[in-house]
Length: 400
Image (cartoon, rainbow, N blue to C red; front, side, top):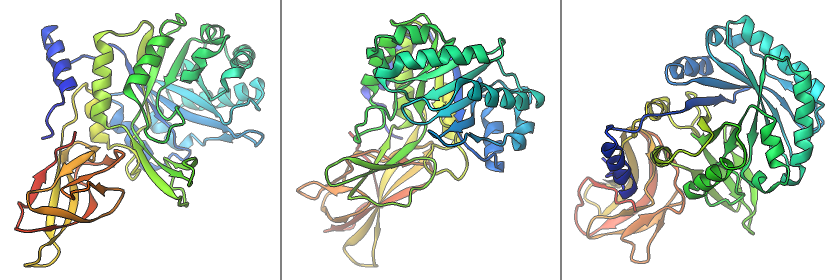
């Protein structure tokens, strides 16, 4: 098994001193369902996650600037909606508001009727809009109009971005909604990573001082493929659907589930004021290779640490030869990230690397500049090596 890092061990000791074997969640655990087609794998995933999730935040309509809204057909999901707590989400693309509040309210009201007719509990709606920081005041006014158009029995939720804390009218915006969700992943514009734990904690604590409105923190279950041009600018991002494009440089952006659990444990040691829960983006669906598996997701929601055994396997290219294919394998039981660095057995040197892995100058170590999702039971080729003598069949990784 991968050995516990120092922060993990320190956190475990802290909770032991508090008289508990592991940190117990003191907040809600929600998950976003971001599919536009309610297929059988989506229905199955909702059923599998239901015992662990407090609420499903379901994409119900999407406005793409000046185009007509995309209204999700919810009819296939009626059976799984029954008796579940659901928050319909309206996604407004772009940084400017092009949809009228009355039109958004009308569509959401219709979708709420579908949910309630199926037996779901719907007490709130959520608006997901990445307005520019300079336009936070305009967004606040738009939300005020929307609230007047919505049924009075509904709470109004929104998503929020870290940079909004600099807006002069941020307090007004947050004070007029009933709940908001702070997104701390894929927000920096920096293609080097998906989420920085230290930055995320700082943002959470900063927002806890801005308003008395309760909020959730959105954490990622997915990875991104980022395509960069020769100048290092992002050309495309691939998430839930494949992007048929290539770029001068490609990177994987991922935060290992082990890091996310440690982040939660650290926050729970000194929980910020007003923080009420976690909202996971997004629900693992079978066949979606960019999201962690359902088993790993369930383990996280149970407050357990997801363990994985990741090794470098060397297999001879041909019998009696001195070259070996190098493959990084995750033996499970949970998903993880491929190691940042792996030391080869004595007497072995890298011949060639693939899939973004690189060798050090001496050729005795393989590393990867970005972490990537390696699901339990899966592997990724790292290249081939040449060994002076027969190495052990596998060598445990030495990530660090």
